Length: 216
Image 1 (spheres, rainbow, N blue to C red):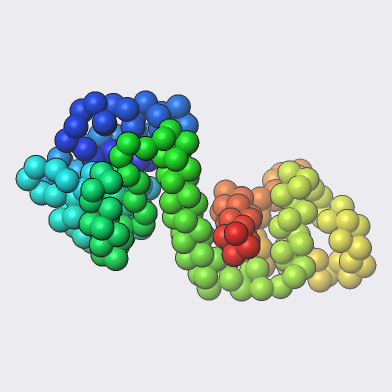
Image 2 (image 1 turned 180 degrees about the horizontal axis):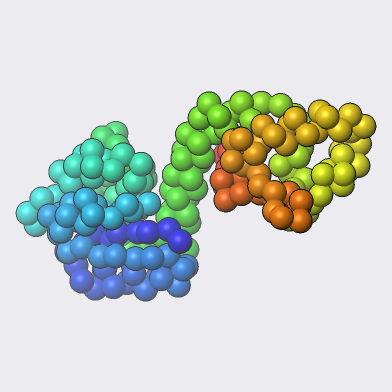
């Protein structure tokens, strides 16, 4: 479940955003000012921060670079009034990932949040897929086909893998399975069924995310 921090000195606005996002099944935390937000970011790895631009004390513009230094992977959406759109654009130049203006529509908020979370997921997946062990495991087309086959089937035996991929050289299939096991992408149970490991499921999900991100 994605973790989101809502930062706004206006309690009614905080409550409104929390109500909207809770209905979308996110885990929500709130902060009433910049100091509180920074303390929470130090303790919790948030996927996204909704940050009000104008607040007493430390402004959203000042808090933004501090959040990015503390947690570079956290997405930040600036929340601003129509009269401060130029400031919001400036905030994006300084590292904000998007902005939304008050008053906003419910669907607009949800769509902006989901878009930023997809961007975060795309970036984290790209980092995972660029890792040497993972990249070398996926560089071979047969290994990619094996992973996708296991993903479709859930669990599958060795000979069924050979038959499904129409590979008569069983030694070759065994070699590729060994590579995938050494990369901790597949596992084999006591009944000799192959299945994806947790890392393997993450890689499959990431492949889908990266392809979607490249084509959208």
